[in-house]
Image 1 (cartoon, rainbow, N blue to C red):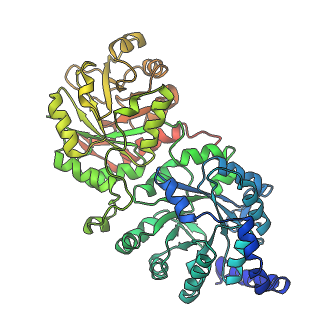
Image 2 (cartoon, rainbow, N blue to C red; image 1 turned 30 degrees about the vertical axis):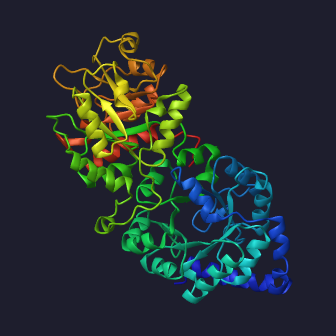
Image 3 (spheres, rainbow, N blue to C red; image 1 turned 90 degrees about the vertical axis):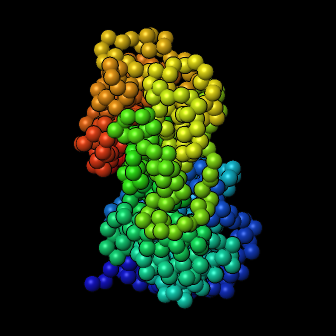
Length: 540
């Protein structure tokens, strides 16, 4: 049976012949100089890298329709939508120029390019189409594209190689799309520098979000050596979807349908980059690498490692280092563990310091979000341990943050600098007041406040909740973590009621004490993150 892809390509070849009959290739080439004058290019790969350094680059797509969904947003004005994306912080704008199934045109792309021209650090413009002939590459440049999509599935290797060279000759680094292992190897042989793994199989248009992971696993060494930038395409709707790929080392995501259907595309781009005001999620008490990786892929923003002696969740410095290296150096794939891959482009050294606590509440929160947007922060959890010992462990393990969960109080906290602090106050299960809690806590610029349930014999990990109205009152005055009895069953309710800066759970992700359950980890992180995922971000 002929696939959708074959049908589209047959039509596109006819369209190219038709275009050539109106404007020959030579006539098109003659327009390049004027196009370069009117539409100077931005370097696509560099523009993506710039945003990827802050976490992940988002390429936002303009498409009115698709073969799998039919009409998505038929009445959209491409230029206006493009300007919204540019102002929302997209690193690139992908414009569908295929007329029959996607209802796009070259005019759409030119309109977008003209409207974003005046924006500071404007996004790169991608011609998203089925390119089969060099004519279409020249056409893209003449109409204002900075880059073009080349789909490996429809191009013989020699043609792919020629089109990559043709695009580069016009100052465009192409986005080379693959969907399986064989296509990835072909792209790498042709020297592709920006590789997009499409989670949608173009032959049947089904989406499988594990495609990116499989392709990366099978080509880990070659991808690492080539220094190609990896991008995930299709099936991405929320921040959690992005985090799943980011943890693996993906640096760009392309988002189309979710943005086209969104009432607030600018908000959604911010959300995808992890820079909106959604709740941050701490998952605590990990002792082994695979479970911690699972938490990071599930979307945890903080991973808690317990160093409190006698805890069923205690981890050694060595164990903590193994977890931190695997996630921070993007070595989450099994293949990565076998290679001592140099962790290129992934910054070492602290991503956050005590300086994050300086400034207004808004500034403090923004600094923490900017840090978690780059990947999970590692929090060492201590209880009533000598400060010198705490600091030594934090330095040896390479922690980002120190959490004091015992009765350390608020005196002499400067000792822990340059580590930023989370300091716990224990709230009675009933009968506490907001004033009482705030009265015990030190200044808002000294540490982030963690509220946990008071228990006669335990410092955290109690599995019991306190009255959330207290947390809401405290959160109104300073950024607060809410802990105590949270799990996938009740965290969404807590987030909706309190709207805390962050939530924290440990025992609520366990069936057996001290042992994390993958399903419960996922349920907790997703429950928290989806509770407020603004209903207006995506309309079904």
